[in-house]
Amino acid sequence: MEDDIEILEKALLNLEATETQDKKSDFEGLYKNWGKSGSQEERRAQLLETQKLNRHNKIDRFRGILELVNTVEDNSKIFNSHNKVAYRPNIYVAGFHKTCLTYSNVLMLSEWMIEKPSDFEKNWFVVPCPKGVRVLVIANNGTTKFYTKYGHFKFERHTGLPGGNPYNFYRRNCCVLDCFYYEYSNTLYVLDLLAWNNQPMTDGETEFRHYWMQTQLEDFPDTKVINKKNKVIIEILPMMPCTTHYLSYMLSSYPHFKNDSPPLDGLLFYHKRAHYVAGETPLVGWLFPYMLPEVIDKEITLHPLYIGEKPADYVNQAEFIKKFEMKYAKKNRRRTSSAMETDKDKDANVKKEDKKESMVIETDNKEAENTKETKDKPMDT
Image (cartoon, rainbow, N blue to C red; front, side, top):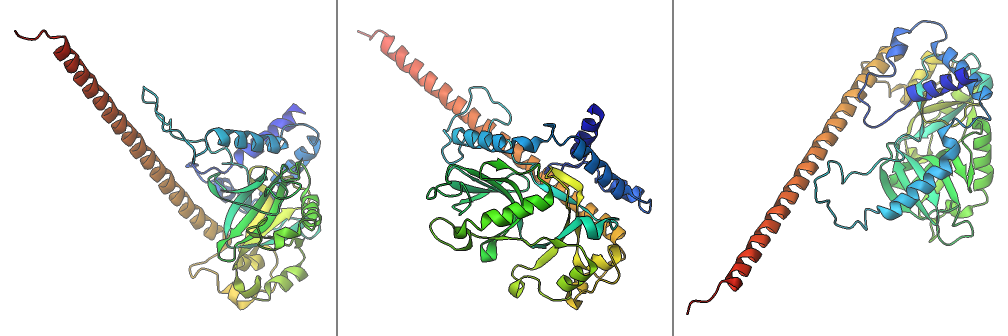
């Protein structure tokens, strides 16, 4: 059993995705093993088996998702950015002004689906994903906070979710969702469910989480309209079976979303038995529409406009992924470098301000001493 736990922990750690990651791409192993049968398939099977063996063991960090939310909310009350006291320690402490990204690795992320799973039509679902911002949504104690996939606070709104506004019976409850936010239409597209109405859901399988999400959201009609309880429209993304017939039906018409608002970005594929885990996992796959005939089935029919989205220099999926990952890694390094430079500038400014304060204090002390000497000095007669 300990070996199984170690395998799953290593799998989760190896699949983590963080903002400051500057190591080699996690896909390097896929390139080296390209063409070897079952690289992704074997990892899926191993992860599912380990997941089943350890179903009742508390090794998944998300079994405490509600404790995490409560801890973050308690800390935010103390270190609220809008109510910070202007305080600096007497001694300069590097990084004193920084805040930990407590939600920096919470969302479950996909891998490129580089091969068709052997149980594709039987055990997989497909979800059409809109172009938008991936967000972690925390509805808790009468308000709803939106965080980016890197854990950065984005904005705060009232929503009709349990715990999402101060006006309903469930205002003291908690709800945690994985979503896409499309700003143009002010719509939140729900992708997955981590907790609902104070009940953790991460140990539930994909099929159950989606069923629960659909049935429960029907009891909260405020999520469909804009009013004082709800300031963003909330819709659940459909999750459908992965048959050639359905995929052709879905992709033979254009656009997927009404009036192409939002545009379709790509497709996520979920294994029915997958639990919700942090970081990248082979139990969730990603493809752009034009990749489906190449990876899944040549018989899948695509609308010409989806075929037209294929880059002009596109050769095959393997080459595309290499270029994509190199571009992403370079962008990530720039972001990390920029963040480090910003931190250095902030640290330098803090030091300058501390130095100025020190000089002011010294000047004040000298003036006070001079004044005292003048008062103590006997007057000439």
